[in-house]
Length: 336
Image (tube, rainbow, N blue to C red; front, side):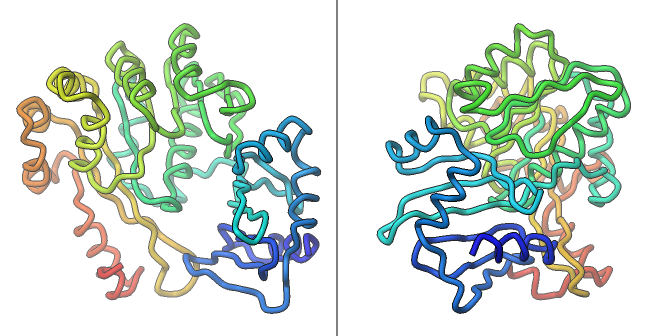
């Protein structure tokens, strides 16, 4: 059955994920939909073979101990981000296709205001949205363009490493949690002693990592990170809520000082069936928004965004409406 997966990976470029579970048919996600192939049962032996081909003995032992394991694997000469896990029926795995060549910003049709980041030298930039919304792709495109355009020391901390960046005008060091570092927090703490200009943190998962990212941004570094949140107010509240109540006033002041931009994105199927396209919400941390964050009036941020479109701010509803008006996506996308 692994040959069948190899074949699908080669033939169907719109597959984003394979879902493989011992005793169940092969399933995959194509343009957002789950599709199952009848009479294509995967066995635990198939999945164990996949593990042995791509993982060390120590990693296999770790999987048996922890019952879940993240790694990168190769299929049909393509890289996939893999999560192996245990189910009631045996072993399961989800393989997410990883495009190793970083895309260009132009090809992703990103909002023009994001090009400002190419000349930014400090501040925290958060790219948010649900799993599978293209956050890693957007960040890879921005990092790639910075790498092409200016001399900088770029450090990425990822789990796992997806897009591979080679030195161009910048120098790039990439670290994978679990392989080249023990944790996001450890690597971020070390990065501050490694003369960085740009730091990419694959995911802001815990209080220590978030605190270090804020400090790095506040002390003159450009820091990119992701969160599984929707919209700027929710994102800011999520960061504040990670901290104990007695620290939250101080953290609001720190966010107001260090936050540069919040980007929220969603992916929609194109009307002509040729793939997917992103809709974006952009919040720039201007003076009025800084004051709202300090004063704990975060619920008023959307009102400021509505009146600041000339600065490049965009609301998600407007972005979706523009895609519908241009005929890129269907009217029904508004309800997704």
